[in-house]
Picture 1: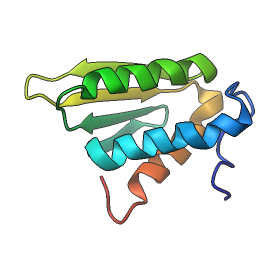
Picture 2 (picture 1 turned 60 degrees about the vertical axis):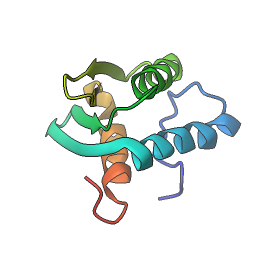
Picture 3 (picture 1 turned 90 degrees about the horizontal axis):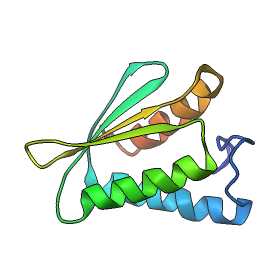
Length: 112
């Protein structure tokens, strides 16, 4: 699989901007990811370590992603312990995209 082969053709983000967006997500996960679970095939639940500006960063990135990939539904919820929960859902036609995202997140040397 090439670096961006999992990006669906329904994504409207210009091709030259896709690596930059992927890098933003990668950096967020590298810096903040505490846990990732897949409660079912169409949903991914992420727990991010909170901190100054993290919730705003997640909301901004999720909002921009929704703008080009409308098949994603992002729910951002701040937790009482300061963590940020990010729920990512897709429709059945985009299950493979969610699977690729989950594999990308968890492939980095035993990350959650």
